[in-house]
Length: 442
Image (cartoon, rainbow, N blue to C red):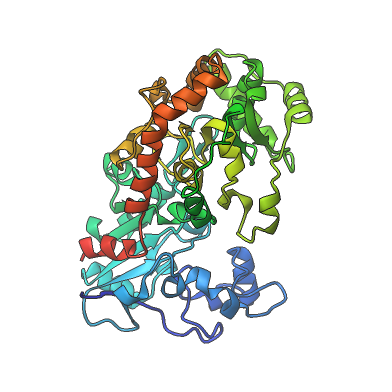
């Protein structure tokens, strides 16, 4: 198997490591001191406020060659001075304001790389190792302009359209970029989310044991940790429709006052649809009465990055379905985080509060959904308010069924959830995904 050639930077004279691709070639001359550069660019991982070089400790996060999840080193040949066609990768971790700070190729690349791109010897790759909000639009709240900024870089630098590749977990990024006629191409991947569940093997082992004690106690399970506009609306609707007590749920109390602009954006959308806004007083009442974290003795010893990686299987056993409150609900993106794959792994039916046409995309990926048992037209709703209204209607209809009826429906659905788990195990991406993507663009 022929390896794909990647260019690596030369050893930086100050950092004493190959200069990270998210650091400008001329970084050491841009400010009075090196420390000021990393303070300005919010990159304390390399040079901290104590005027200490800390690059050796944190380099793996910012190095494509040391990220085992993203890059299978056996498939790549990293060279300082490639003689054949090669790729230059910016990533896999990129600061949120990277494209605000870096507006020209000269801000990102050495002169020899720029010349190789223009001479079609090199292709520039922006690799975002996680998240999929790039290009997302949420009315009255958020418009991500990353693609526009990349396009401006490409146009200003007179780069051929096929010479820049943007890779992220936005599964419809290339559709949007094509529609906008931007001067670069997009690719997508899922491995970071598919593998972001820590106790998969424990769960798979448990399926080998037959248990007849898994009785449904509540209709649905929904996790809502970070306060967001759509989660405020969701909780309000669940309360008003007497559904909240038929669930195992979490809704964390906001840690600061950032929720105020989440509430404001929600109310602007509600007003535009001639719907009644949620007042601050109402929100405070909801928080006071309904804020809730989910505790589980098994999570006490969990050593992962955060509890969202852990499948608390008892929560799934006690509920009929998962109401997945995804990270993104806006247009121009479809992003499946571990939140979507957790019920699939747990063999749990699900309703997906995500971006428009997310269920459609799951089906394109080969998964089965649940339109045989309830209305899934919520997937087509253009904004999260309409989507939640439709989801509430589905839950309201299901809430009329007895626990015995839900148990019977659960038996009918078993074949579908078994299929989804098996499909996940067969199709989840491995760390050769980057090789496969770049191979297409040689």
